Length: 432
Image 1 (cartoon, helix red, strand yellow):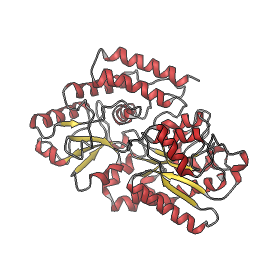
Image 2 (image 1 turned 90 degrees about the vertical axis):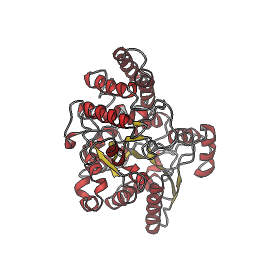
Image 3 (image 1 turned 45 degrees about the horizontal axis):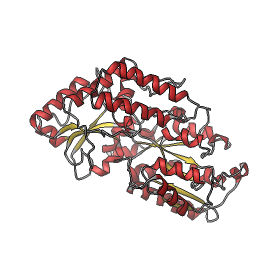
């Protein structure tokens, strides 16, 4: 899966980070003079094969033209999760200058740890970010109004379907009719009755804080036309008609056996265990040669036109870390890595969507040559991400705890548990 959960604990991750980062041990924070300093820097990028290729290309092209400010790069060290690895490295003072794999929901916690550089302090930074990403950039500001992360790339979540399994179930492979909840449930019933696949869909049933990003939040964004988990006052939004409809839809999916409730090893869609999957374009390379797939927007209660449907972006951003002593170079590299040419390289190498306004028209030639990605390019303009506050991971975990019990397991009445989850997440969101 895109989360790429790995196998080592936080303590070992910190040790690995200490070894490979080349920084001094201890909670190192560079002084304000670092903002104008130039020289060698270290960066981390994801271990996704396509992103490794992009990262190596970035480093090679930069180093060729900047021999006095070379980049040393590596994959994010192995650990239970990228977020735990980064958090441990912040504590140890061993972060690199830049990480191109920041989960937006974790940014507030990293900022609270004192681990991030305020990008808005660089001259012209806000104007640069907003010119590149447009209004989409606003959701990546921290509560203090500044940017502690550079909006970088998104993987807008859409509904993949397996054409072979749909045909086996007597469903259309060109017009699968999945735009409403009723349509989806009818298709799922046919898949189950025909035994086309063990399950219609198989979202992860595990309890990690980020799992709402791949079941509840895409459908809630679609149903509300772009509302996230919290509003501008850090108050939970989802105890409303739309939230109840989305939760009830998924509760029905689980209750009827259309989705599995157990932890599954491997990718259920790629292995034919599920006929559908909600995922972004990063997965296209994974499915190549394994699944003849189609893709449509995520469903809404009554159906929404494709060009008006919102979803969750599954974004990863770039951030600068406070231990960096050559922040002038790091800022220049951030701008270089998000330039039109590097955004094109990212798109062509990974199939992931740069968070760039007018993406579809800016790279119209790419989408013309790569029609498999065209829908994702259009969808990228309508996404809403996780909150960015200091307690966002706790907020998401509280929501996931509710979801596991009330929706996946189906225990108890849904509405009072949804209301209680909204109260709990609001309390956590505003907690100092």
